[in-house]
Length: 381
Image (cartoon, rainbow, N blue to C red; front, side):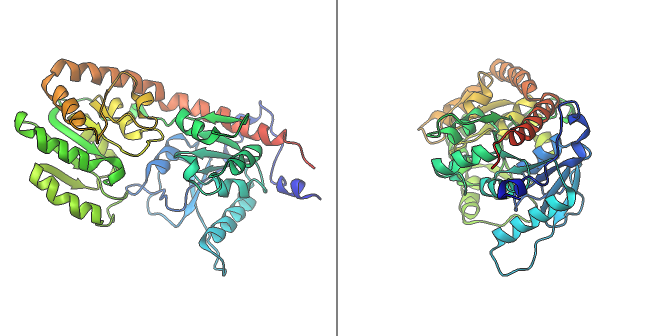
């Protein structure tokens, strides 16, 4: 048996009519640091849970208390062998593939792992961040090779374009992130709050929000500013040097910092706040916080970086966090214009509906079927 033939020994022949019956044989492998646990989940885990069918297997490193509701969680067994953790993680993934015998394995944000696992069965890679910063996709040659062996999907056109740069004619697909509009909090009377929600790190522009608020707060009595989040997802997030520097600045500016809050509490806060600010410096590959804020009906101020401007369209104000006066002007404009806030809130809800989970599940099924067919039609030696 050749190497290529051995690589596909886990593959099964699946026709289009049979596709709806194979959900129990889909395996999703989370990145090593993602926890598939209620109250501790990051953005990727929440998305996987939202899209997973009841029979899907979701594999991650470590046991969990109460797992997220989507699919069936299984902890990878990391072997104790004298090699790096990365290789031990790979071995545990292969063992999970051999025990569960999936028709398709989905890998999130790990190009090198996806390429390795493609030796053992059909693989679909879902990219949530800039692939050119990831191991296994940094060079053109690596991305070209990856695209020949797995179906590469990105959460936005921006991510896909970053993957394709310099590669010539390769196949990629877009799988946008999604939101379950049916579980969002019930609309209520809003409070004069400007909310930042997310990871409290420099890339997210939190200090720019504090700076802007310090400059404009005296002109807007009755309004409050709140930062909801921590360095990481979960109540055990560490106190970082960035947080230590930010806290006295926030206190002096009158900005409340709540620390980490569960995802449900964040959505509640977005439903109560008049304005949600997303002042990222980082090239946001999608902008899940902005989507959630729009779905909750808040008026949004976002930075024009990465995929954010495409995501929000005309349903938000754009302001670069480090452009002098830009963020201050956008926030002041919204705080003084009730009609504009109402208009943007309504436009945001309408735009968020394009990313509802129902359409996303259909798209995922299409891409799963395409990934299986993609591998089946690859030339084998």
